[in-house]
Length: 183
Image (cartoon, rainbow, N blue to C red; front, side, top):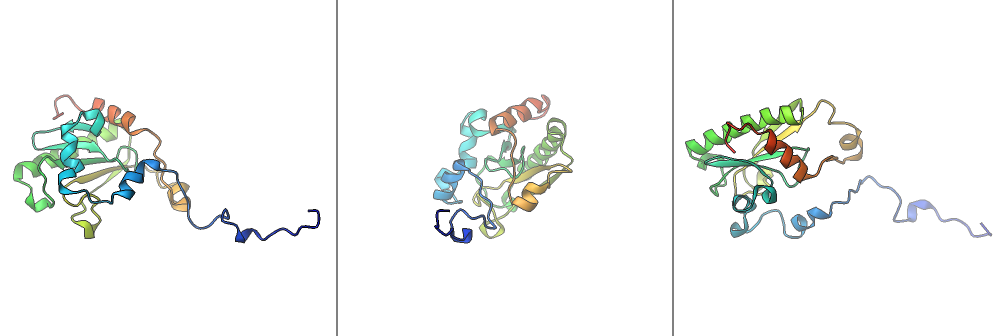
């Protein structure tokens, strides 16, 4: 225009590249302070000391409890943790192992009803080298899956959409937890 040549767009910083960006300011604490907390600041040791709403706990047992993952892979992503600060599954007592299993089964039943999911990914990452976000405290992931949850967002855009606030999800799962089961 007006005799001024236009610059090629590929030289501008705003040109799209292969990266997708999602504004997630809540993750800044996780990024700034690293993935591994100090032993005296373990979030899984601290969570049971707080209210269920503050810590996102949906159920409490005698040896273990269930809470929402603060950084979920899918909506309703739960963690089952023993109260004791142990790092490896083979350090758990038979009572802890049994209750982790019982709470996992109950969580799956609750998620099938409350979230109408079609399947699950269950797993434990043992140690930093295996990808444990909190390597010092044992925890099992329960990730609900739906037949169509692998839509274009994660496949093409490399982005995961979490449609509900964590507090809303916690309240729904906690209220769906069977009264006869450990709470």
